[in-house]
Structures are given as structure tokens and as C-alpha cells.
Length: 291
Image (tube, rainbow, N blue to C red; front, side, top):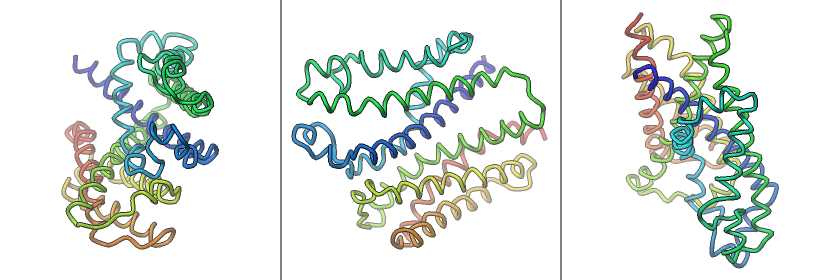
């Protein structure tokens, strides 16, 4: 039972990572390619979709790990069928296309029900298809390939490095949720007027989280080894990542956009640091106990 739960956690972590990355990449590319900002302001569309500079749009990418976990829960019962098939990625992609895009029970955009029952123009149903089709294709290919590698024999050093990197990426992805919580609560606590609307449509602001993600992955890889050998404790881990997740956004905005208030940066950095510390405590607990 414990072994199966551990397998599920590994699968769910991969799904969360792949969903977060593919969603961000394809969303960023397609929104700029098709000009979602202007499209969402058109008649009928603006009554259905929030503006691209809405605060909700800004926090959307940060909550993708949760969607990835939901996908993992839904796919878990048929996981073996997908993995045992030679073209398992095609089965998974087909599920997304049929049930998630074209055949949704609700009258969603790009679905058959949406075309029939909604007042949205046909061009709007079509223009959203490239992003959804390509993102779900990438998700299916990467997730199935990644999960199949689990059962392929690899040299010890390769498998260890891969496992450590996977763990670091998973933890860094969950830190996105910390940024979402931190951005909301810090604005309330510090009573700082954040121009979230302009930030949501600015790719430079979105890239700030990518840079923070990369730094978090690197430091998790470094600190993880020290944590597993008891050379650093959880309190020190938390302080380190609080510093990293404060200084990286602070420096990024100073260089590329406009200076962020120090208090705001400190408050925002607190929550991803907390998520990372808790995740590392869970992820490295057994390793630490065995050493």
C-alpha cells in the first residue's frame, strides 16, 4: 500500500511539473502570437472572458500544479494501460481532445456544445484550439515518456542525478503556489498598491517567476544533499530560501522593470520559502533518516 502511494506521489509530481511548464510556455507563446489581450476586449468575448490583464489571469499559471495533481488523480486508474501501450501518449492525448476539448459536458469554448449553444463567434472557438491541442500534446508526450523512464534500466549515477533533479523541479513547481499566496496576502498585510493588471500582461513580469524557479531548482539540488547528510537543518533551509525568494524578484525587478518595495519582496518571499522547506522536509526525510 505504501509502495503504491509512493508511486502515485511520483506520478502526481511529474504531472504537476509537466502541466505547469507546458501551460506557461504555450500560454505565453500563444497569447502573444494571437494577441489575446485585444481579442478578449471584443464584443461578446469581453462578457465571457476576463481581460488578460485581470489579477485572476496573473495567478493562473501559479495554480497549475493543482491542476496537474487533479489530472494525476483522474489518470491514475488507467495509468498502466497508457504506459503499457506502445503509443500511450496518443491514448492520453486522445482523452484530452475528446473529453477535455471537443466533447466537454458544458458548453465550453472550442467544444461541440459550445459551438451549438453559446453565443461565442465561430472564430473564437477555432482560435483557442492551437494552444489547447499543442499544450495537451506536449503534456501527453512528456508525461508518458517521463513515466516510462522509471522502468528502464539506467546507470546508477544517471538515475540518481535524474531523481535529484526531478525532486528539485517538483519542489520548485510547488513553490509557485507560495508565490500566489504571498502575492495576495502581502498586498493585504502591507497595504501596498500592486499594479497587478499591468503585471499580468507583461511578459517581463512573468519571466521573473521563471528566473526564480531556476534559482530555486539550483539551490534545492545543492541544499538537498546537505540536508540529507544533516549538514544543514530545516531552519537554515527556510532562511536560505526566504533570502533567495526575496532577493531574486527584488533584483529582477530592479534590473528589468521597476524597483519593488523591500517589505513587499520580503513578504512575498516568505511563502515560497515555506512551501519549499516543508516539501524538502517531506522529500528528504527518508534519505536523511537512512544516512
